[in-house]
Amino acid sequence: MTEAPPKTISEFILRYNIGTDCSKPTPYYDKGEDWPAIAYTVTLYDMIEAPDGTKSRRASAYDRHPIEFKLGIGHVKWRAYAGATSDERDIIDFHKRGRRYKKGHQAGLATVAANMARAQKVAPTAYDVLTNLQHTLREFYDRLSFEEWADEYGYNADSIKHRDLYEKCQEEGRATYSWLGEARAIELMEAEDDGHEPKA
Image (cartoon, rainbow, N blue to C red; front, side):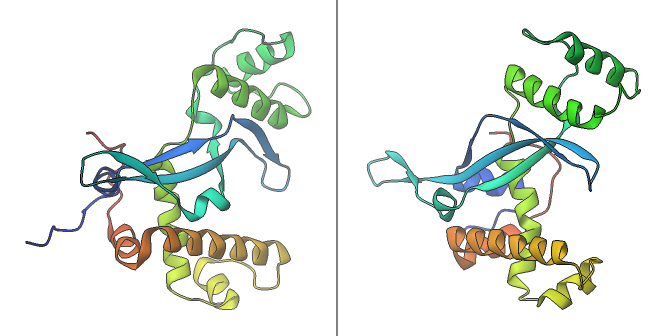
């Protein structure tokens, strides 16, 4: 009897034993986006089981082309950490009160958030990454040209920056498709976002 495809992203992760390897967190801040974040380099993998029951990691396209992934600064608990400078403690205090510290505050937030992520061992999970890759996989699978993609998702077809974003999305979608294969790629695209980490 054929096994029913997983209905949710969490079920998909459990079905195929998907995990992540992450770099240490680093600060990310783009003045154009005005969005401080915590940056990681992420490699996705899945475990395959041999007839004797032993499991081993299966190589994926992401071993060669890791994902640049970002978490918002809300993923960390805003509290002082060992080694924080007086400026960093002030940034934490001002942020908790919803106020800007001084010029360069956003870049400072990114630095402090990355330090807290390191201290609190905060890192993106397979669920975080796959919910994001589900969108880029669909965009790749739809085979849209840049102009079609820009029109579909509200980007500027005359923007070099948006073309670069399109190319990055296509690269990520292509790597995801290559790693999963068509059958599992379709399962991921059709899986519902259940809004939480898988529960084994």
